[in-house]
Length: 626
Image (cartoon, rainbow, N blue to C red):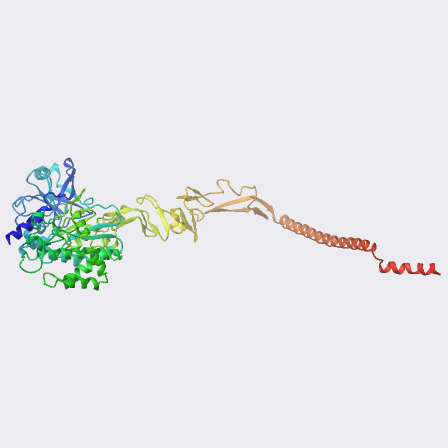
């Protein structure tokens, strides 16, 4: 047994001796007093719930006693301004997590722990005893964010609090802003995340934590995946057995492919139960299930497989077998042949392409840490900090979307606060149409001119948004001037123009404000000596003296009788012209027909005698014969 533990420990350490660990950070900005304003880094804790994508303005309080937070506080901390309390505590004497737990129970909204040595920031981890001692289950109940700050910054905060307590000119409170908005990268409209886990369910609390997360998060994960919002990839940690030990019982029991890929024995006992290589093979099967499901366009089936596998083939309940796992594959409609082909031969003295890729992915690069412990969640290439719980993880994923591209699940009331509900977020709004430029996002709000019923608005989103394009005049007259009088609405918006405003005839202005033109006062119309002008809204009324008639186009007055006689003359002349035209046409047709008849008879007479010619010549021939 001792030899087994020694080999296992060596296998674990081998992957991490030369590893790299990245401390994920947030920002702390001092708001007041002014003379210590500035930005400082804070290291996120591996417990609690970091407010990814959000901020917290709070009042810093340093307790007079129990400054390390290792004992329960006998008071509830409150600020004078009713801001959330950010409790400042000293490092040392007890676990980081117990400090956060006691602070939460005393009313704190967040915790800043001051390092007690000058060193680079480190990640405050969950106590290992949490996974073996049920008496410290408080870790799961920590729901506030915690962070570690360096010694120098912490001492500055303490001294400032002392001055505030003794000198009123320093102000009444120390106010800081904890900022997690850039703690999670959010480059585009899709979030890539990966979950490093294990198919073994016999490792106690840590294994149960992973399975509970998969079961509880499955619904969210599948909805996000089906909608194309996320790309999820499962991963499994493996180690290799050093060359000198490959023929040992331990390596043969815990490794496949001749010591290349290993996992600890589930029961920590070589004499009974399942072997470490059973875990490696099942890890490989689950990786291939995801690959085959992904190729078939259904990558979300991995979540179904893991949940069904745990129910039907649990190692902890001694149900596991190759046949059981393969039955789950078939029942989900996946190709067992493709899964087996992907897995390859675990007894071969050769590299396995799938597991080799897994070992390569374990190694950190750029801003990413090595993966050395389970479970590990990586979102947008950043290692997630906080408890492995459905809502906390979903918040972190939602913070990974580019602003304003989040799916609906991220904007539910339990996930974020709708900032557009208060004073419209400070954005433009059309009260009459109830149209606003405020768009709520997971990180806050953006002022962005909207598109309403196919009509696009343009502007800065803060002070103005104007409808442009076809149909714009239907949207509050395209932002142009309009006014109604006597049940008649006049607008400076023209449907024939895609943008801009022009005052209609009878009005003057820039189109956004129009005023009636007084045509009478400005002598623009009705200027003839006989005219009498009266201005109306949007026009004028012109009357002539006596029995005169006003002609608007000529802006003059004429006699009604002359006008009647003129129309009579015009009609008479037109009638004569039309009659002459008809008579001329008839005469023309008669003359043309007579001329044509004469010409035809002349031509025919040259070739044959006509009837009248024959009758006239006959007597002459008879006379000559006699």
